[in-house]
Image (tube, rainbow, N blue to C red):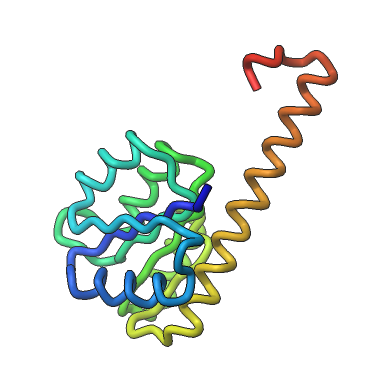
Length: 150
């Protein structure tokens, strides 16, 4: 089953460029959904599970940090990344610390580096999922939880 990525940016042209870069390198490995509205993105996150969620930092309705903080509540296991034209260190530190952002991606990006960051995020998501599954198996085997709960 392909991994899933959700991209949020209020600029549709940025989303198109991101999607083009990712599809050219990741091809059938991932399913990519794009959103321009944070509220619609939050609604989608309540409906479907994503491995990686990327948000623009500066948007009219809410900041990327605010959005990713809500993502953390809805889907705590999703790997969160911010995409921003800002290289202000206080902004970066806040994003990394407050909402536990895996990567802070700077616009404009270099496709090769962007793809590498996404590959790392997808690998982290997969490794964490496997770890959760192993913990559940161990908990079932030790009798902590029943098989139906795992």
